[in-house]
Length: 137
Figure 1 (cartoon, rainbow, N blue to C red):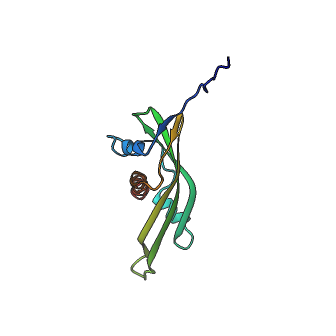
Figure 2: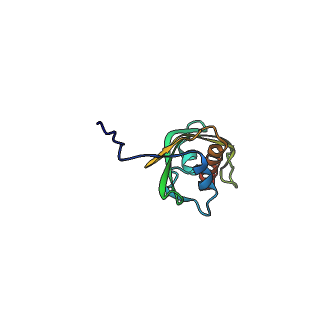
Figure 3: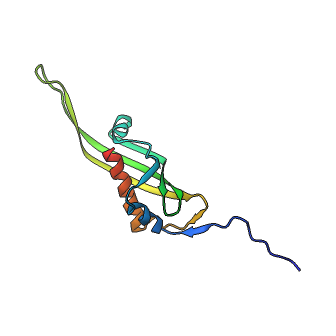
């Protein structure tokens, strides 16, 4: 008789409800915080445009006692209004028309099989959360 063995490590399936749990928790625990700030993007921009691919943020999800890794891209553009100044007034510049877009590429969570629709409303809410976090940081 042949015995069928199961792999000792079975993954638990999770869908986009995990993002709902993350965004609706009392505190959002960012383990590995979002690695860039608005000021850094302005400083590194070429022709008032900044793009960075493959950034990662990690969030602790208490319900699952695990860390959710989120991989995303950022596009950031803005306009600069400059005043060259004069003898009495130093030069000034203002950054206006800031536009940021975060696009989530993938999710990873150890010991879990994530089946998350990247075009779902919950994923969009997480993208908006990351955009606001970057702009407010």
